[in-house]
Image (tube, rainbow, N blue to C red; front, side, top):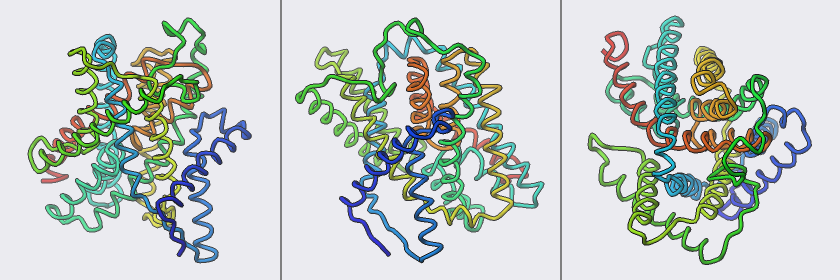
Length: 401
């Protein structure tokens, strides 16, 4: 067993990002299909660790203490980027995308339960391998698996939830790019006229040069720290109540309040360039750590019926993004980027969605609308709609009854 401490893990994550960038730069196939650099580097390292474990019995243990703070910093930066005035202009598209996302939740649960019953499995296993772990991610999966195990007696629910959420995280980062590549054949690559200005906003084009100052950067770090502190406190306050939400949603909410509250009072205007810089760094390192620490042998140990079910879910996600998300969101370049993002959080998580969209916009050009809509829906509204959907399916007599 090789154990890497905090510093060793941070070095490893940084190397993963550099390796991913190098491999993508030298592999035209990966560039063609818009595979995100953190996904490439992280999976490559995870595969190497799998080979070392299987062939030589060598295991590497990472200190992932910083992984959760990085994820929370990313969501804080999303909140601090949410300008009410800008959200108002995109309100109609946010509402439309939310309906599309809600439709996928129904598809995932219907498909999961139906296939589970066809294969002679407990319908609850199909529900757990549906919107709970795919659109919901690890956090939602952990919460509901405890309910399934304690209230419904579903054995190994926690292990199944972790495995399926991890599987979704991997595929979410792999299918978004190919789906976008297919859809780009239907639209014209944007030119300078696509957006009102050429300055990337938020998480668009992370390689774009952003001029910042020391003082404004420190102010931004302070706002993110306050968002983390306030969000964590809020999450602890509402825990166990009907209003309970994941901590990252609370952090995002505090970021939104800070951004718009301070500006409305005329106290402070958030520096978006600094927010996007910190957010992009946090996002990249979080994804690198999440993927390089994957225990691929746990995925390989999935029972064949569950593996088949998850492959079916990934296929359904790709088809849904291609035929529904793209068409319903306007059949244009913005719709292509939105479809790639939907694959990211429809199977994995919002960070994966952002990485998918960045891979597309770095190659074809910015999409202000996509980076406005996806973070808010994928990081905030999805958890509320998902909780309602899960409870409705549990009310069915052949599922939870």
